[in-house]
Amino acid sequence: MANERIIYFAHGQESGPLGTKIQRLALVAENLNFKVVSPDYSDIQSDYGRVEKLLSLQPSASEQLILVGSSMGSWVSLCASEKLKPQGLFLMASAVGIKDLEPNSPKPFADKTLLIHGWNDEVVPVENAIDFARNYQVSLHLLPSDHRMIAQLDSLAYIFQNFLRQCLESKKKGDPRSQWEKEQEAKFQKETVKNIQPRIPR
Image (cartoon, rainbow, N blue to C red; front, top):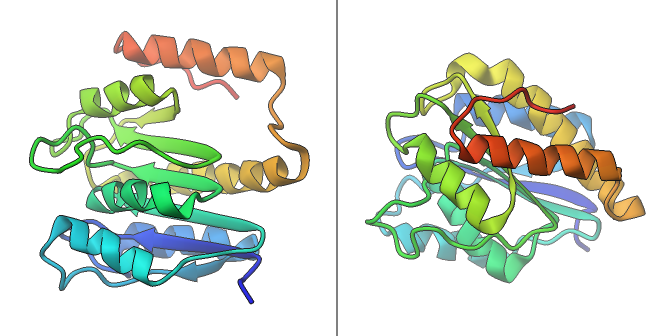
């Protein structure tokens, strides 16, 4: 029988299954009664081989399946989402818009998708994340951070906690956002596309 709530983490190309961000976010998830799984992809050289490994694990959940990715792990989670159809995709410093990856901007297949990116990301330009969010009309949070985001762990944990709670609420009630919240998110997306650092609506 599938777990009611489960999260699969996908680490970055140069990281591992017990990286700093994963450990911090795993605590947040466990406090909300999610089971946490963090496979080790470090021995897989092929980009799509990582996707195949995730799919081979047959992730499933009776209530909530959430895929969380960092850097290359975000790309892995995005590719896998087409078959897994998770309730949530939480993507940090996402490797999107990278010419060497095919597809380079895979479509997200999830009820709720959230990108977190650093204004000063030196690996994946912030413009890539902005373009991705605009093309697929998904939420994007921009933080004063580099690619690793270690200095923003508290912010990441706070945003992740809210994301999981919203996913749980959505399961119960459908989209829990008010019309005002939807309008504010649309406004935020528009301001972000203009490359202006806006105040994130609450």
